[in-house]
View 1 (cartoon, rainbow, N blue to C red):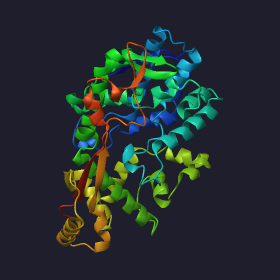
View 2: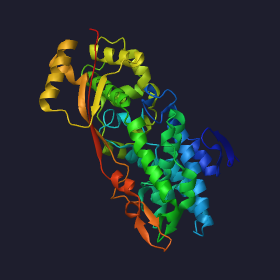
View 3: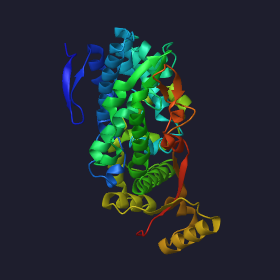
View 4: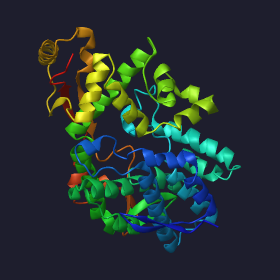
Length: 408
């Protein structure tokens, strides 16, 4: 029996794996692959300590889920052993569909396939392999289970996913300003009318949680250097696809070359177990291996971007609140093209512009507060919390990033 095995986590200390089924899922190659996918993609270009993986995060989220469910039970909420285990499995596997570098390549290596959709297909496949033992976890993940608060714990504005990644990302980046009181928030959670609520005395912990999340987005997740590096990586993969689908002679792992050669869509994954298995062999090392090989390619675009990654000579990026004008963009494009001495058709590999946005609180996915009088109200309507109302507004920033120089 390997259930109740103990792991040592740098954020929480000892984590217990509570059942044989959960241990078998963790031990499965689909889940072990998450060891080779960094949680924060290319953020270690900014914060050198940000080398933790999706594997770390999934185990941490499972641990917080056990604490949360135990707390809800202690408050008199009935949770069966089957529901308990299924909730742990749902949160454990919520990110299993991530590809290399997490979010960075969802819309380049794949054709607009969000990781949540692939996670669902993978959980369905695991359910088949484990003889239907993940059926309830699937219902919770799909939000098809009648007790809706279980899905809210897995996916909502105050879910266990966010509670773990904010604490974990603060720990590994060293950005202490994003620290949240997860223990306090969990202790303030309760269930009312089959809905996840936070007791009124936990209001300020929620305000701190939302403030910390907004800060972490601008200071870590959407840091301008990370945006620049991700644009470079996307450009590299798009060029790799263009070449491989043209003359088909690039070096790389068999799995990466297969995905460069083809433009797969979600229905392809739905209809092919083999394709899903191929995807589940991909990780960050496939991309880094290609980068080391492509720095010697004859194609100057692949060669230059790969060399830039290996020497950390990232695109110069400007980030500001006001939008860049059309004339300003065209002028910057022409200056970049002339300085790099490249054809206009190749400019989009070395020049990008666009916008990024962030809002800490979405009104359509509300966090509810249980008042001392037993009423349920939106946290944004709670008294003397104007900061939460302000966080409902979308903050957008505009960027231009470009290569400073290349070699021909």
